Length: 123
Length: 123
Image (cartoon, rainbow over all chains, first blue to last red; front, top):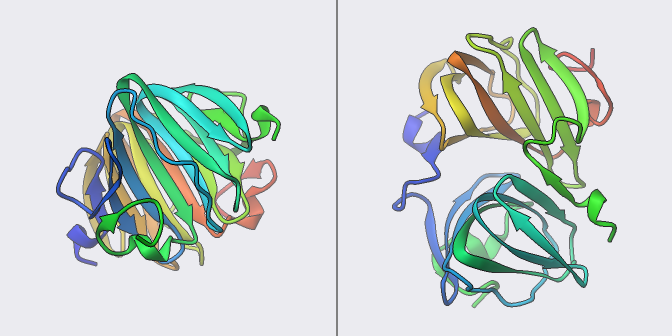
């Protein structure tokens, strides 16, 4: 098991597959067989589009603060919070004034995120 | 979507399902449909048993340091490191002198972890 294929670091800005989700939202994506991790850096006050997908998603707030919208509700979140977004539930995130870093977990992996690209979907 | 069913905090020692994995290793487990998160607190120098399972596992080192053994190799890890452990690969973790906190992710969820208990398996 070559170490570099299985061990990573949240702060390594060169690791994983690069995806620009939206202006001010960039992700480094690490695909597995059953789950996919995505380390998302969000600029102050930046926000993503409301979107949904069939994959279950979890988010872990690593740094900063913001507002998580899902299922029509807005929830204030801060570092240490985490949440589950079931399949098909529309969701978005808006960072607070100091920005945010989130670890997203998708299961199963989002196939369209296995290669570098832009946007929240197949674009 | 009742907030308390979908939003959690890594530092909430009463959240999730409690499991004592081994002496000095305790977990709070949060099951989803496709993935399961487990916040594991490990006492200084404590270590788990070498074990394996069919579910894919990811580990994210939240605090502390230690040695991750998987696939016969020992890798020193510290806060910010994360790793993927494919299905059926034997693995264990030994905390460093200040202990450790790890976020484990299982996909699919480990069915035996959906209820409180002890040990790394069905015990």
